[in-house]
Image (cartoon, rainbow, N blue to C red; front, side):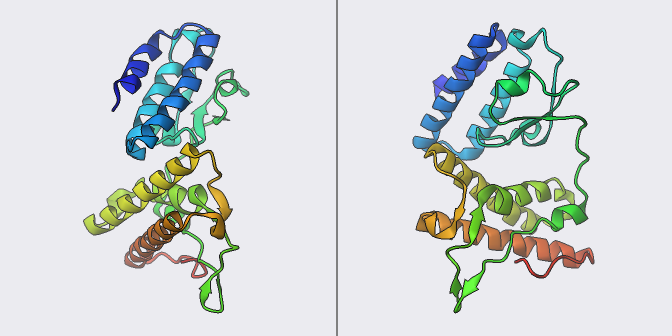
Length: 230
């Protein structure tokens, strides 16, 4: 990582004032965009951003507030700046959610997904018109690829090594696509025709790979899944 990222990470525990906290958050977004523009991997940026956010949540700037407990992607070290930052808050709304645009308060910690739940979050089938992909169909990188892949990764012990490798690659592709869209300040939910050709191709390949993994795991565990999604 670039020294500017590690420097900000090292300084975060000393953040002492609300105004300083807002400055840290704004700078973290600037540095993340710059790192992505210079070819830093989305997974590396997410790991850094998650650690930074956790350190800021525990900093003196929020010492007078009831602490929140990170869960979800933030707790797993998988949160990009565009990812909802989930935490369990003793008081809702929390002060913390007022600082982070993507901050989301939860009353209780979500239970780990069961295999059945993870397998039912399949990417939707690509609609076709006259045998060609329907480019007016809505594509959501977060909901149709990244979310389902991240959910199934939490059930990795049910997967074979080959399935895990395919799943991980699909998840990494989802992370890269989501990071690219955020970096360029463009939406990640949009009609397929508005997704650049290379991104559309990468999304389609990753979604198909994820669907194949889901079908394989479901068949081996005799779990019925919706056949209207691919």
